[in-house]
Length: 255
Image (cartoon, rainbow, N blue to C red; front, side, top):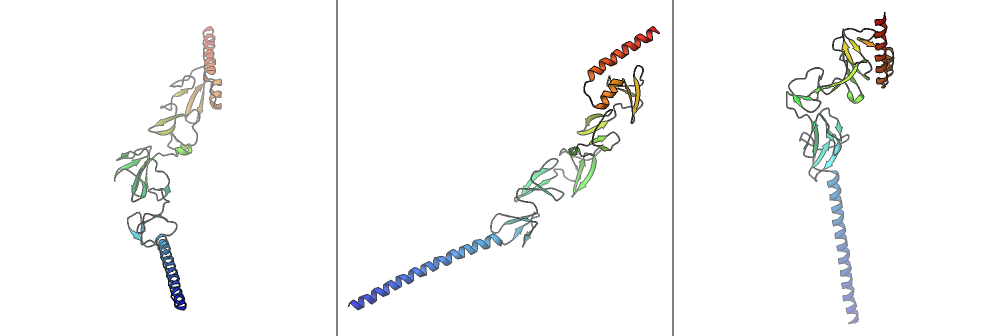
């Protein structure tokens, strides 16, 4: 009886051990299968979505992958969160004159004008691009741009060229949103009186005349020197100029 009992007990222990090993192997293979499935989902989606809505089987550099789900992965030339501009470049922000648009997680920075209207530098739309603005074409977008690169400090000169500085005797002004460097007098035959900041046909004593480029300047010696040095103490030289006029008139009357 003891021998029979021992044999039955051994069989039960062996059966329980075999069952436990089998269960462990079963759960191990289940976990391994889940891990492999996860890896497969991460690295090998079924297809990629491009910006134009078409599908592609691969998405390689320089393109970037943005996963939406197992079956939906974006393939984009821009990094996630960046905007695609009409010239094909990517930037993190969408600035004027363009407006932003998002479609299926793709971000676009594009013109708000419908063809054939022209996009202005401030984001407005017009049928024409008139001087001094310049009409340019960029990737199916008509743009009416400022003629000079103001972000580099350039001014539109009176002769339609672009200059880095606007120095005396020329005057800075803003016309239609454009930084310009203009002649002080509309009529080039007039004299620019720097003491009075006006334009006159004549320049009489005790003032002197000098031509600086196309500008005829009427000045007192001190005032012109101060202007050319870029000084700011104008009132002192204005007083000296008035005193000069007073003594000149007194001298003329005595003669």
